[in-house]
Length: 150
Image 1 (cartoon, rainbow, N blue to C red):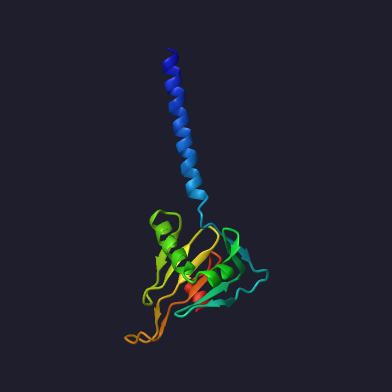
Image 2: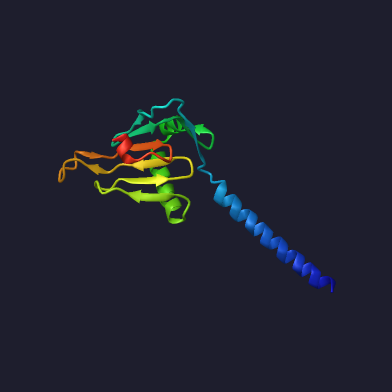
């Protein structure tokens, strides 16, 4: 009789621990992004960093922090962080953590999270020339759309 209660107790404990682990992994990602929104009524785009192939803009926000560290400082140390963020956004979209929408402009995509959005442009202005492809990245509020920033 004692063994039966012990087995039930251990089974319940295992289920609860599993639920806690899943919750922790889902809501406490290592790449947790926090956004400081701009104060004011008019939303504007501002270039915050330039890389060889593209620029990074904030739209209607002051700062972006990843794991408590300013994105601009991270970019100064590791230029590949934006590619990693976009790769994670693709994974998040596949797993249902964000919404991914594609634009019919040559391949631009938007990733919409609960309180922010990321636009990865791939806009072809002069097909077939590859010199006029806009590959800029915009980070802003979840209501931001490509038509707001371009």
